[in-house]
Image (cartoon, rainbow, N blue to C red; front, side, top):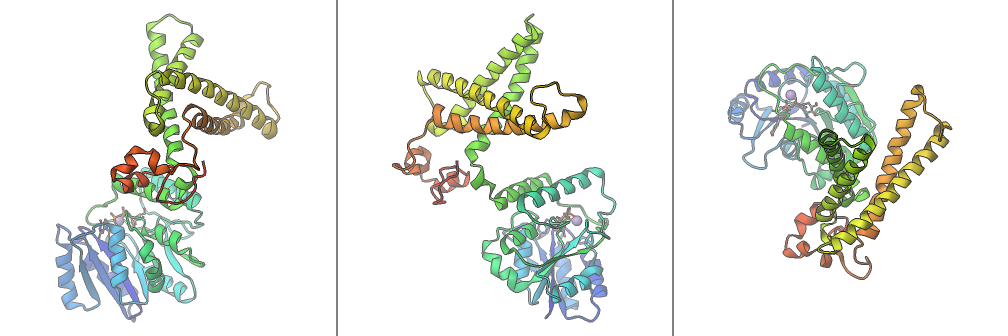
Length: 410
Ligand code: GDD
Ligand code: MN
C-alpha cells in the first residue's frame, strides 16, 4: 500500500460518497486506501461509510466512540493506516482531491511534509466572507511569528507525510483542536517542507465545526507550542492582565468624577489614576502574588511600596520614551508633528512595555518579595501545591513550577 488518505468526519454523511469518488478520480491507477475517521456522528456518517466500504475495499472506517476531536481522529487514522505515506484531508470536499498526485510527487521527490496551501500563488480561499478571511490571516500570521514556521498556510488541514515520521513524533502529540499539522511541524521540525496551491472550495453539504471553542483551543495550542510560558511566566501575564483592568477602572473613574464633581480635568485624571492604582494593587495582591499576599497592616505598607514602585515604573517609561525617540527619530523633547505621530506612538508603545516590565520586576522584588530561591523549595511555599493537586497548579504555569525542574527566567 502506498498512500492512505485519512478523512476525519463529524456529521458528513452527505459528503463522503462524493469524496470517495473524487479521490478515485484523482488517483486512477494507484494503490491507496481512504480511512474515514468518524467520531460516532449522530447523522450516522460511520454507517454510510461502512456501506460504501462493503462495496469498495479501498474504503476503511474507524468508528471512534471515545477520545473525540479532529486532531485525535487524524492521529488514530494515521496510526491505523496501511500506507507508507499518509495524507490528511477534510471530508467535506473543501480540500480539492485533484492536487493529491502533485502532493505525492513532491513527497516522493524528497519533501518531508507537503502542504496543500490556500495562500501560495495559484491557491485561494474561495468565497469566504471578510471576517473569516481576516481571522484566517491573523491566525496564520500568529503561527508564523510565534512558531517561526515560514509557510504560506501553516493552518492548513490538508497535508501529506511519511507514516514513519508521524510514528516518530506520535508520542509527543496531543492532537487537541484542529491544528494537528502545526503540532506535527513543531515536533518533527522537518527539513524539507513543500506547498502545493489549491482552491479551498465551498462547502456544499453540512456545516462547519469551526467554533469559538476551536479558536480558543488554537490560541492555547500556539501558546503551548511556542513555549512562551517559559519565557513569560504566568505571574507576569497576570500582572499585565491586572494592568489592563486598571485601564478600564481608570477610564470609568474619570468619567464618573467628571460627571459627579466639578473638579478640573487634570485633578480628575490624577484621582482616577490613583483609584486605578489601588485597584491594581488589590488585584495583584489577591491574584498575581496570592502566594505572598499582604494582610492586615501589611496591606498599607505594601500599598505604599506599590505606589512608589509604580512611580519608578512611570519614570522608566518616560526615560525609555525619551531615549527611544532620540535614537530612532532624534526628537526627544521637541514637539511631535503629525507626520511623525506613528514613530512617537511606536516609541511610546515600546516604552510602556519596558515600564511595565520594570514595574513587574520591581514590585516582585520589593513589594512582594518572595522567599529566597535557593534555600527553600518552591513547593513548600505554595500551600495549595501541597494539597495533592500539584498537577493542576503546575499546569497553570507558575513561574515556580516544581515539575519542570527548570529555573525560571524571571
Ligand atoms: N472526527 C472528527 N472529529 N472530525 C471532525 C471533528 C471532530 O471533532 N470536527 C471537524 N471534523 C471534520 C469535519 O467533518 C471535516 O471533514 C473536517 O474535519 C474539517 O472540519 P470543518 O468543520 O469543515 O472545518 P473548516 O472547513 O471550518 O476548517 C478547515 O479549514 C481550516 C483552515 O481555515 C479545516 O481544514 C481546518 O483543518 C483548517 O485549518
Ligand atoms: Mn470544512
